Amino acid sequence: MYAPAVHDESTGYAEYVDQQLEALRASAHGLTEEQARLTPTRSALSIGGIIKHTSYVIAPPEDKQGRVEEGGEVSADAFAAFMDTFALRDDETLAGTIEVFDRRRVAIVEWVASRDADADSSVPPAPWFGQMTSSDVKLRYSLVHVIEELARHAGHADIIREQIDGAQSGELVLADTGRPATPFAQPWSAKEPATS
Image (tube, rainbow, N blue to C red; front, top):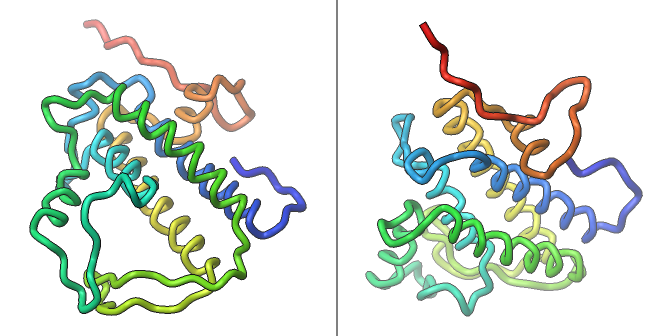
């Protein structure tokens, strides 16, 4: 959790980004490869897929394929590459996906902390929202949008993980980060199957 503190604006944004990424990473704690691919809700999302997609979202631009052009056009290759981010392929592992995620997590948190939130910036078209052209913004707009998106995906991961084995975010974060129990949560540990 991002503990209360007196920080400048960009440090605060960086801490909130890291908090959401911590929860996303913890959602995979203790899962097998098979469990990481489960889609236990009506959605096609899995824990592995959410972590892979989030890793794509926070990747530097040079690690992404294609871009949205003015007018909202997206090439077929760029769209296919984007859709591929939502599920682990047979040639991918959860551990490998988390390794990339961890590297990108450090980089995005450092990048956010080093920015001037009041700097002029622009955002590309987002045809999925009906935004067909680039827009001029202050950088804080994009930083808050990143936090919003990460929080949405962390919520998806919470629901999917609870459907898999009942584990909840607080206990998973404690276990994944090696933190001690609190008055409200114990670090998660695998439950022994019931015997009859």
